[in-house]
Image (tube, rainbow, N blue to C red; front, side, top):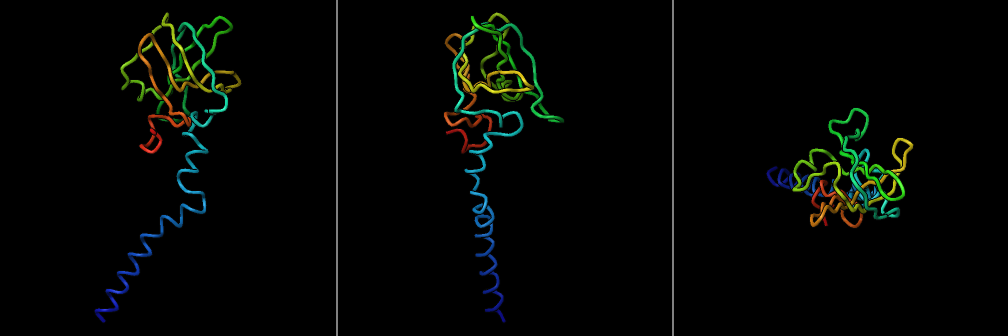
Length: 154
């Protein structure tokens, strides 16, 4: 009787160990899901295939909703370039509050980001922002937000 109980405990432990792997693999695993989504809400619009770099002067700062009913907003700056005025979506307010760089009207910024359409308007979702000698990195080379989990920071 004692041997049966030990055997059942071992079998249960082995099955329990393999259960999360078997659930994740049919969907392609966590890495596949994160590569497809590149974040949640507004962050899903980011597309590394549409990268460009612009330079301009900050004319306005505001916030946009990350998603309807979302708990936090994203910060946005409006840049005036030689060709156009364009909105640049930076990232979540809570993340930007923790950084060593702030933006004010009149600042000259160089922004590298993904051209997206948000609320039927063309804008840029920033991956990196340079202000003078300071650089604010927001996404890695694959487009993962640096405010995400540790496997996305590489």
